[in-house]
Structure formats: C-alpha cells, structure tokens
Image 1 (cartoon, rainbow, N blue to C red):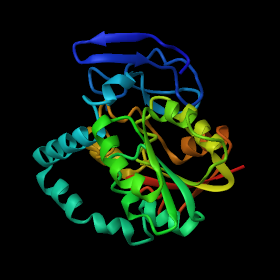
Image 2 (cartoon, one colour):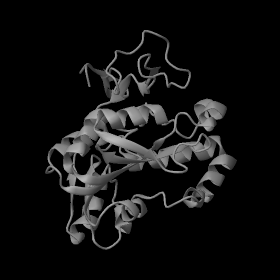
Image 3 (tube, helix red, strand yellow):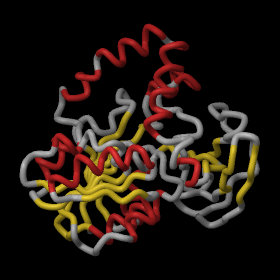
Image 4 (cartoon, rainbow, N blue to C red):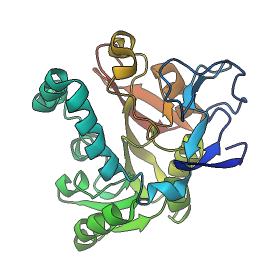
Length: 278
C-alpha cells in the first residue's frame, strides 16, 4: 500500500489506498455506479483495475467483518432481494464441477505433489479437510474463531494454522517450503494483494502450483445485473479482477498464469487460475 492514511467513520476504521496493482493514485473522478456510499469504487486509469479506494482496516476482519459472519449476511441479503435467482444459485452449485473439480483439495491433488500445502485465508478449514492422504495442511486465517476451528482439523494431520492477515502470516513461513498453495476466494478480500502474492512466491518451491479463484469482473452477469451482481460484496471485496489484471498481477509477482478451460469465459462469474513460478 503506497499510502497509510487511516480514517475512522461511524462504521469503523478504514485505510486509504492507491491502486493495489500498479500504485497509481485514485483518479479524481466520481465513484463507479456500483459503489456503496461508504465504500467508493474507482477504476485505475493506468491499469484498469477496479478497487475500493478505502479498504477496511485489518483489525476489523478479526471478528466484526470476518468472512464466516459476512458470508451468512451476504446470502441472507441475496435471498431477500433475489429469492428465485439466489435459491437457484444455491441449489445448483454442482454445476461448477461440470468441467473439472473447482475445489482446492481437488486442484491440489491434480496439480501439486504430495507434501506441505498452504491455504491462505483458510477460513474454518473445511476445504482442506477434504485433502487427499499425503498432503499436509497449513493455513493462514485472520478471523480468530475460524482459525481456531481450522487448527483442530490441520494439526492432527501434521500441519498448523497462523492467526494473522495473509501478508504478515506469509512472512512467518519458511522459504521454498510448499508444494502447493490455495488462494481460494482470498485475493479479492486482501487489501494488499501484490504483497500477499509476492509472499506466496517466497514460500513456494520452484515447481509448486498456486490455485486462485476470484470473481470475474469481466463477466456478462456483472454487465446485466449491475449492482445486484453476485460478485459485489461491500466492503469485503476490496478489488475486482479481470483476466487481464489478474495476469498482470501474477507476472508482477513472479508467476505465469494459466486459466483453466472454464476459468475466464464471460459466462462464468468467477475466474479459476493456476499460477506457476517463473
């Protein structure tokens, strides 16, 4: 983050940001129409990344804005505003597996060697609970209660969980240690995505793989649904990637980006990306 201005509002502390991809200052223009009044969205004129000009302070993510709580609130809101569409979405999650196994456990089994693997933003550990034998789960999670739940799953398998934000948690891990890393629904939440991905590059082996899932801002649904697009979570999602901006982030942090068959088509609300160290 290239500026550290902190502002305290009625809603709590938030931190001012330049573009988290290229570092350019926010444009002096009106916020995008998708913005929440408290959380203005800007589009960088230099690299096209769409991001929150103000992001929640890390301290608010430990409990108040923890993912597990926010996730429940998100679905309550969607079901109230779009009862038919939201219900169909929940009932047909199986569709995401039609062209492959879009889960961290399945992706790591397919692409990464057995051994130590890391989940950045591991939540309560439910995704890595499904890991195949031979994979040792490690995690980083900022939400205290979720980290405690994940620890009960990871430690019996020889792993551990760090209760911290992604950037500082990665700094506590050894270099070139992990065979695979999952950043599944994480980078859109991370106020410092470049620092986080550079931290991942430091801790992975040269033949490791990194699995990334983020909302696809370039999808058609966003254009059709506008503010009601499923990808908009204010203020939980602090930036919104397209295939172009995701590929640039990967390259800037020392990775190549491979989009799986269904990973960046405009019909998909999400992008699925496999990163490999350069």
